[in-house]
Amino acid sequence: MNHGLPDNDVTIEYYDSDYPSQTLSRFAENFDETTEFQGLRHDVARYMEIASGIGKNLDVLEVCCGTGRIAIPLAKEGHRVTAVDLSPGMLNGFSKNLKQCDEQTQSRVALVNQDATELDLDQQKFDLGIIGFNSLLCIPDFEAQQRCLGRIAAHLKPGGLLVIDAVNPLELSMKGSHVPTPFFTRKHSVSGHVYTRFAMSSPFDADHRQRLHGWYDEVTDGGTIRRRPYSMVWRPIFRHELQLMLQQAGFEIESLDGGHCREPYEGTSPRMFVQARLS
Ligand SMILES: C[S@@+](CC[C@H](N)C(=O)[O-])C[C@H]1O[C@@H](n2cnc3c(N)ncnc32)[C@H](O)[C@@H]1O
Image (cartoon, rainbow, N blue to C red; front, side, top):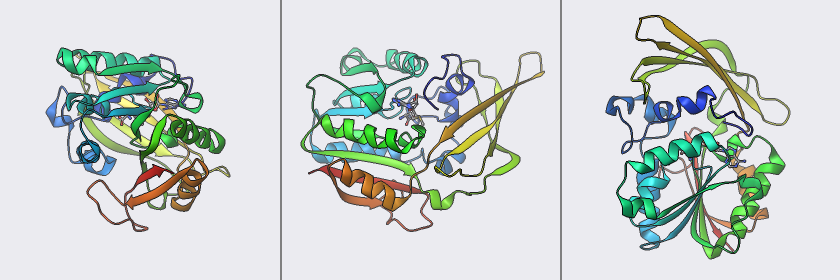
């Protein structure tokens, strides 16, 4: 989801059901077989593993934190997490999820409403930076993506680690698809209504941008169908482009995996999971 979305945008309303969390989801069955394909099944465990490999009680910066799917489990583990997002609607969802946690966890999270491309947290410096789950791609402009990496670099301690998780664009269709496809059927995290999300995509444009659009069909209490369209733009990044962008922002790449379980990266890998050290 992109800059400038209203707080009542349908993608915000459905976020926790579309992108469920193993630990936070109200309906365990929403964490279904599609979550593997979406790239949500193992990512949080991998962040926990990386953080604990660095140490205890880290200062973690998560930019584009959404509703806390990654940040809240890290805070539960004892890390102090500064969680940044430009959407007040997403941060509102984060606050609601955080209120379900114990007071100590709550006290370890600082929510910040800022644009990651202009991130300014005074003089704060972090051990670990995270821009997870396609979030860099949700800033759909090359220069803005580059500025975001630069602002994260400015907020890491010397030798700090940045982890980026993004879909492997070689696995996407450059031509897109205008055939509406049911993506998944789930329960809405608040109403409990069953809904199906239908997905389509435009061809990549000259700037590598692609529009992802479709609609939600939700079964209401009266048994009628409520249809609501959604639309967002992302800018997938290719492997070598990402590597060069990171180098330009002052990082050295330590590893590139093809998934969240240390799979080696190949052209057919579902993801690009990068660990980069501030040099
Ligand atoms: C795909 S969601 C990921 C949320 C969360 N990290 C997760 O894994 O569930 C992308 C998030 O990036 C946020 N976002 C998009 N552009 C941003 C920007 N320029 N600055 C800060 N947040 C941004 C959106 O509001 C959204 O919450």
